[in-house]
Length: 421
Image (cartoon, rainbow, N blue to C red; front, side, top):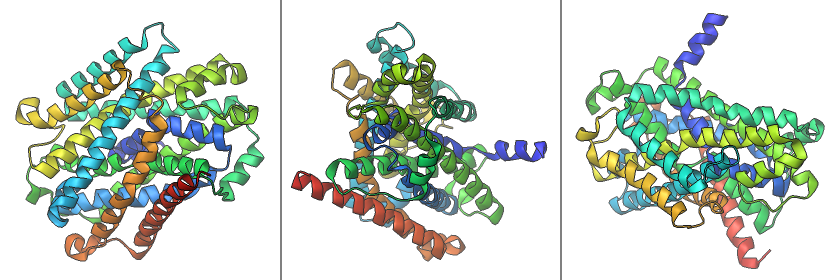
């Protein structure tokens, strides 16, 4: 049994990292806002979004495994060029905004723990992550990323410290509840946007290519094609990552709903505010766990965001890419990573209020995800592109359901915003 467990954890990689990176500081803030503002009413989203996440991320991985290229490169070949460019620019802009908000969120959370000015922490985190990605080999980066996923356990522990009413929690988890107003629907779009988020589509597919490169498959022809064993391993990895991601999101919502929401603290805007507000309600230890978890996930998520943008740009505009490449062989790829993080640092040092925008960056991701999900499901259902690995009817049904849910929530949000309700 122990050997089987070790073997299972040994095969985890891109899917686990992707799932953990999904709970970035923006995601933590969004789940905190959801719990404080709407109580337990969104817990059911964690139940249905888990298979949705797994299906979409599995499609992204399988598309790249079959074709030997990243998702953006395949979109460039299969879509009208103006649409491929538009989607690439939309994702890069959302990533950069998200990245700046995440760095600011990390710095503010760390400032609760260490007596160092937040601006200094912004600079320290940003430069440190640039150096790590430029000088560490891909295998070492993946190893560190896998260990950083453990930071998310802080939120599981915190939820048990605050002693929520588990009967009501389980009821709201199992029975859907929907409120038709702009605040609730915008929060729903934010929760879905930070759960099923665009930058992870590209990251997942690009990591599959990186894994093949690490195995010695240096050309597209060598990487093209897959087999049943590789697909099973990929799905096990992806499913584990998505379950882990949403399990953590579940506990964050439970923690903030049973403390802040239950005590009338509905007006928080970030996870840092949630951590500060937890102290009088749940004690210093809960506050520290909440803050340290945010720093740990930020160290994982910010490089993922920056590198996702670099993969999108490289695959769309056709230049050399890859964390497995040294800097001198892929200078433009690393330049985009560096530029993204530097812009994120500047957003905070210039007092562009990225911290308050953590939640709204998730809403932006929710909006951007809608057209991307349509394209991904369409590509994965294309028999000429995917051959025997075309998505099953069940997978297509989940994919189109994801598109319908996120599209419907986005339309509803704009409708009720326009009505002012």
